[in-house]
Structures are given as C-alpha cells and as structure tokens.
Image 1 (cartoon, rainbow, N blue to C red):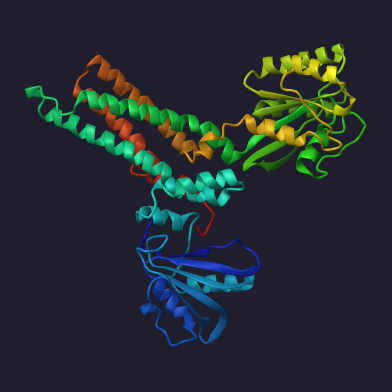
Image 2 (cartoon, rainbow, N blue to C red):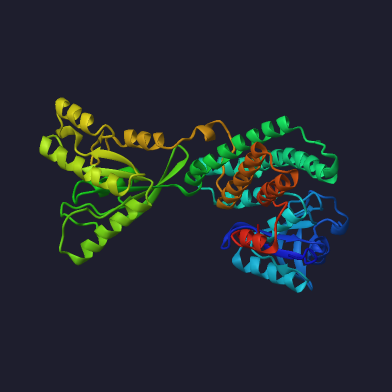
Length: 462
C-alpha cells in the first residue's frame, strides 16, 4: 500500500474498441508522461495546469506509437488525490500493450486491483463505504442497484453514520472526563440527553439494519424458483417472462432434467428465474437427480412460483392445495405464488372457487403470454421498495451490516448500563466499542488485511 510508487493500468475494458484509456497515478506521473508525450503544439507538460487536455503523440526514440489525447489532473484535485494522467489512445490491443510496456520501462509499475481507489481512500478523497460503493456502481446492472450505489458513493450512508458517531463521541468525551474527577462524584454528561441520544441511535440503527433485506435483494437480485408437476408449462412460463426461447418446451413429461436460470429486470429490480425439473415419482436416475436439484433451488429461492395444471374440479384443487402445504411445511419462510395455467379453460365459478381456496393464484396462459404482467406486479408487491422510492439510505454491503449489528449490540449494552446505574468507567468501555464499529464502516478504524480484502474485489484500473 505504498504511495511512493507511480502506478499505471488500463482503465477501460480489455480488448479492441474505438478508444482505450490508460491511467497513471503517483508522484512521478506527470514527469513520466512528459518523457513519452510529444505535444503537437510546443507545450511543456510539466508546466501544464490541472484539468487540461492536450493533443500529441506517444513516442520513444523517435518512434510514434499513437496519436493520443493526454489529460492532466494535479493532486490533490484528482480522483486518487495524487498527480494523475489519463492517456486516451486508439483501442487497438497492440497499441494499448505497447504504451503500457513503455510506461513500465519509464518507471511505472502495474496497478493492483482497486489501487487507484485505495489511494483515493488513503488520501482522504473517499471514506471506505464510499470506496466500496464505487465497486457496486461498476457492478450495477439495473436501475435500483445503480440508484443505491450512487446514493452511497455520494456519502449518504457515510454522513448518517458520521453524524451518529460524532454525537456519541461528544458524550463519550464527557463520560471519560468524569473518570478524571471520580473522587468528586460529578457528572458532566447530562443523563437525560444521553438517553435520548441512545434512543435516537437505536432507531436509526434498526432502520439501517432492516434495510439490508431490501438492499441485499437490490444488489444480488431475487431468486425465484418455478416449480410444479412435469409438463404443466414451467418452461413455457420462463420463456414468456424472458420473451425468448430460453428453455426447451415439449409435450413429453420430464423434458427439463436440470435447472435453467436467467434474469430479467422488472421496474429496476432484478429477478433471477429458475426453471426446475417437474416434481413426480420416477425411476429415471437422471430425472431423479433433477428433482433433487429442484428442492435445492426451492431452498435457495426467496419466492416460489407453483405452476399447476387445470384445477377447476375439487379433486385437482385439493391435490394442489396439499402440495403447496407440503412446500410451506418444509420451507415456512418462502413466499409462494400459485399460477394456474390455461386460464381460458376456467369458468367464472371455477375461478372464484380456486381464488377462495388459494388466494394468491394468478390465472394466465403462458403459451399466449397472457397474465405475465399480473405476475410481474405480484412479484414486485412482495418487495418493499418504499425506502428506495423515498431515497432513504439502504444498506447493501454485508460488511456494513455486520458492523451495524455489532454497534447495535454495544448500544443496547450502554442502554442497559444506564438503566442499571453502572459506573462511568464500565459505560465508557461499551461506548468505545460502539464507536469502534461505527469507525469500521467508514474506515476510521481499518487495517491492512481489511483493506486488502475489500480492494481485491475491484477491477484493475479503478
């Protein structure tokens, strides 16, 4: 994590393209760039102002590698907080490699994964939660995950944690001060105000902890298992939802031997649909393995779509009701949506009877793509997106969630201590621990191993 090296890396995806951007950052960035760049106008790059762009050639010993645009960003007013150069060259893989090799010969070293952002953190340009949001922003593949990452990168979550930490730190300082005057038995920290602050912190922490359920869904998508007996239209439903022929459809029962997965975005939320093998008694070894996998996928799924055949008569309806009860007994936490296929076969009275027995039933025709919008609406209704709509802070990071839980536990200990009237020195221990966990989130408390784990998941060049 040395800041003395000057690093370089390709900042755009590898491969051919119209242009590629090569980034250099570090104390020698401008000097190294000036050594390989020949501007079309007689300019001295060493003297150029920050946030300027210059046209010229990358050269070595009179050999021109490419005609490029060179951008100058002087520290601390750059992304990394250091002198930074960005070379926009033509997107030939050969040109990219030639320029990178030239920069390495001139004194750069290749950047590690996330090292530019790591330097931004170490130079105080971003706190740790904002730095992690950069990786989430790059990985975002739908509107909701993009919105949450942007809000966190702009410091929404960090600011909320920083405010709580500062208020708690002020009271902690007063309580620590009381320890210096223990013999005089004086109180500098107003206990009424302190209790009010603890209640406020508990309220905010609960909201942030609860938001992780939504945040995790937004970040990773919602796994939805499509289950049911063989040949009831599960694969047809998957194809209708995806609007493409993703799964093989056949009148032969047991066609789907393995699970088929694909993802779609509904109103900014990612849903990962899993078409599973039909559930039935079978002596086919391969099909049996597929059925076993079906139950594994049900366990992993957050929502189960139970696709059923015609259930207009009482016997069929009772059978399906019994199957759904079995799933609920085995997986009590799962949301189950019943889909009755071939809606055109049902009379009005049969539809009412099915709805009375299985209220979550949606009638559709997977073959004619009828009822898919109603199913999508029902899926969205299972996700509490209120916090997202109201632009509230949503926790998506498992590390943050873990630190929040630990901070919450310590604050509860402080509350118990206040009610029990324990001494200030014991209160101070729990307060310090809570402050420690708050600091872990934003990086005020960190270590090399933690930083290494976080930035190892970044892409090279960011």
